[in-house]
View 1 (cartoon, rainbow over the protein chains, first blue to last red):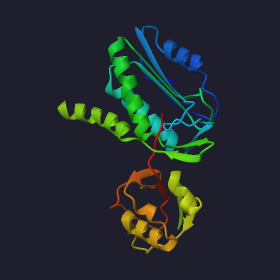
View 2 (view 1 turned 90 degrees about the horizontal axis):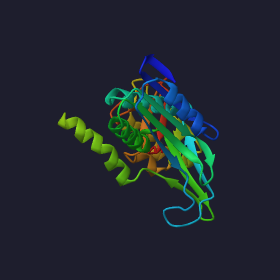
View 3 (view 1 turned 30 degrees about the vertical axis):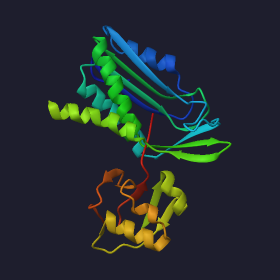
View 4 (view 1 turned 135 degrees about the horizontal axis):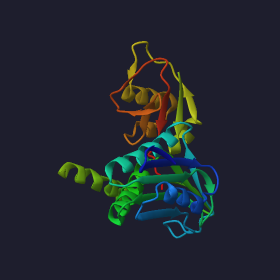
Length: 165
Length: 79
């Protein structure tokens, strides 16, 4: 957790093994003594594909340089855009099995509303802009997963709000 | 020039490809056309396959120069 000034802290991490969710959230909570709210979101690997087939592994390929930079930029944008005091984004890469945590987003702020909003924004950007490529492996073989139209629409909601400002 | 590929598109090129580009450079769209015809991979022409030059995404009109680090990336998806 890096704090440019007290009460403006950001952490972005590319994790190559299981995310220690409790430890990351504790760091977030302790980054400032006076947070009134800590909101977190965990994205996990489902056991079935969209087609209803059993999923054996989800593999997230990453770029050796651009992936971490994309996580840092998204985390920093969340901190800038909302009245929040700390943002933590931890994203897995590599092979994962059902139930494992893919992504952890944590936001701390004085009040809950901004923290919920920032977490929602961070996830919408991660779904469409974090530099990863997903593959599902199972009895069906291998299948690439690309952002859905819904993901793109979710991301665009925040652009419309920008335009209205 | 060595070009690297990431995501779904990588399988079509075995991860990397070697091409020569003119000294004056070539726009991304021109390089895509060159790759598509040289390696017989039309998928690279799709607008969703984006170019990164020196680790930053660039538009189709961006002119690539010899010496740039050039990569093509299939649509990204995290979370």
